[in-house]
Image 1 (cartoon, rainbow, N blue to C red):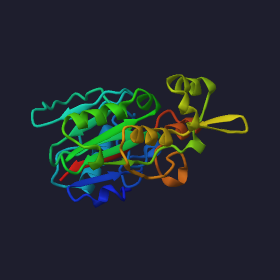
Image 2 (image 1 turned 180 degrees about the vertical axis):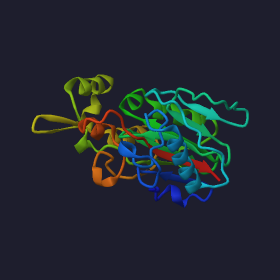
Image 3 (image 1 turned 30 degrees about the horizontal axis):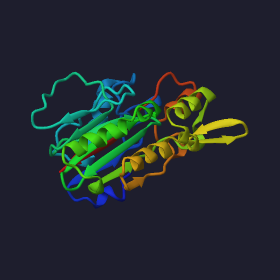
Length: 253
């Protein structure tokens, strides 16, 4: 488990960015696969989620997860929220409820955890390139402000994700970002005629453009095998038919 040096200073929350170590799954899912969307055995995923939950708090409720669809939609959980077994299609969670761990699953995309220390509101964002381009970060921050949060009290932690040097893209991908904003060209690098995209850099710039200044970045490349994270891109290169999911969670104590 990896922690944010800035979030760990906050006494009222628990959090963690988990890699693939320490779970029950086998084969290509070895071992802490937390994604029911994979083809892993469900009982093993369930056991892995329990391991993660207990690392954060043995007294907490089960981890609340979404059916992630690379959107800019979020879900707010307050005391009136009606829980059911069917997962909601969205890519970010916001809550002010205690002892409710919220999480996002990634396998190269960017996990972002947010906390407002005064209003005691937390958020977890799954920011792939699609969601980031659709401004999911802006939408979440805007809603937090509506709920009384202040930018100066929000801490943001960018978790392990694919590094630019591992993320080669095609020209039409680059054009999408330039069409959205010509200034996005700074997030593309070139090496021997190959285009690379700086996803964590793009995400960080979106936090900054929304005037969030207290930002921590855990600079670990999920594509690099030695870091022991699940990586969709690496699995595809190895011609695996599926891949596991890393989990990042945050909870108000």
